[in-house]
Amino acid sequence: MSDTNPKRPWWQDAVFYQVYPLSFKDSNDDGFGDLPGLIERIPYLAGTLGVDALWLSPFYKSPMRDWGYDVSDHCDVGEVFGTLDDAREFIRKAHEAGLKVIVDYVMNHTSDQHPWFVESRSSRDNPKRDWYVWADGRDGGPPNNWVSVFSGPAWSYDEHTRQWYRHTYLASQPDLNWRNPEVVEAMLDVLRFWLDLGVDGFRVDAAHQMMKDPEMRDNPPVPPDYVRPWKDMGPYDQFVHLYDYGHPDVHDVHRKVREVLDSYGETTSVSEVHIFDLAEWASYYGPDLDELHMPFNFHLMAANWDPASIRAKVEAVLWHLPEGAWTNWTLGNHDEIRLATRLPKGHERIAALLLLTLPGTPFLYYGDELGMEETVIPEDQARDPWGARVSYLSRDGCRTPMQWTPGPNAGFTSPGVQPWLPLGADYEKVNVEIELADPESILNMYRRLLRLRKQTEALRGPLYQGHAETPEHILAYSRGDGEYTVVLNFADAATELEVPDGEVVFSTHHVDREGEAVSGEVSLGPNEGVIVAHR
Image (tube, one colour):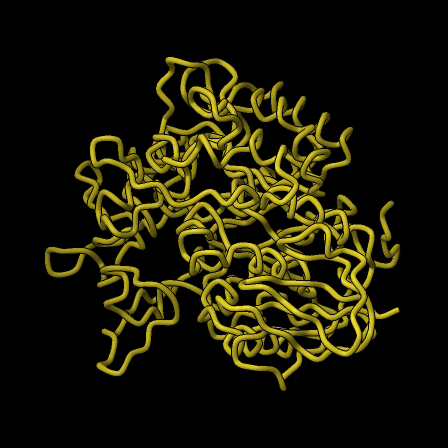
């Protein structure tokens, strides 16, 4: 039974699950996951696991140079994924199962094979020339010193028209010119197309990127005392990015997107905003909460993995939220090293408890509920164009096929078929079939926790109080009006913590602890987390 607050919109109560369609389930034995395969697995997502909403990474028509993020037709399905009818069927069946669906909205750029860009580059006087960003060079080179996120100049020279076009990512991903009203309307029509098909919202890709300095000023080099806000981004980190993302005009674009979403009723949006200054990040809600519903919150992922740092980051995020705003939390996605590999060994369970009990909307990444680890990909089987340029930034290792069974190809595709990426080395032990049969598996832990969260308003609501006076190896906080205490032990040894009387309603490790009485203090095993109810 769900304890849902009718005053909150659905997306504030939901747990989202990111599906990377290429790697989820192959239905036609070509080695690539597809929409019919995803349809087969809806019962697992909605019933067995028990999530509430799905975020689908791109499945649009694409030459696949960036595996779907180079879109050649925003309103059609790529052949490898299926057909538009398959998309309609997936949306229908997901809704029948009680799942909401959001899809990727790749708004910053298109493929260089998109008909718009083919026209744009055909001549300087083509009507679609200004649909992309073209400029003359400087001193025989690019117009300025901007670099691509994927390394190298953010400009490529077109021999035919003798100008440079801008690309924030690959040269095969030219940037759209969002200062052109025709582009704005065409891209808003893309939203309308998918909303008319029944999707419930969008994850907006590269949401801070599409508006850059119109004067195209050079970015300054990083100073000697520069502190990187997150991970090493390779050559991209050589500059302070003052001028090549986040121009204030981007907020007007987001308001236009929000107007379309609001015209369709109960929709939502989450924007990919890699900005780590919290005040600037919070500005993406809009002054009247009139931009995208939630800027993606990567701050927990970027925090040092210790109780004090996590507590400080959580409280800083909550403090910076505009009045009435709602946040989200995530610890994994298709661009990051797998959670089970990134964290100290044995910490993936307390990470799940943290993610699913903070105030805000959690986003899970496929396979994390199994404890899937990063896979080392042989060079001759690598797929990621970023990794081809900066090897340690390859994203292939977190995109390997979903591990369904201990059998051939982990049940992702038929025996004898070559999956598009190699399987994880541990798939014979780490898979849905094996873990469902083990009551103490991490998968069954996720299932219990998701069920408890769905039944418990206090664990989904906004009320949160961090506990500062705890040992350095313990993170503890209250949820609801003091109704629940969440305690996480980051140490590799057993410990205890004073808490009000109550009972254990959840343990990351021991099902038989549920219902255990707590009198003044709760004990925890190594790397264990618990929820104590105070009734």
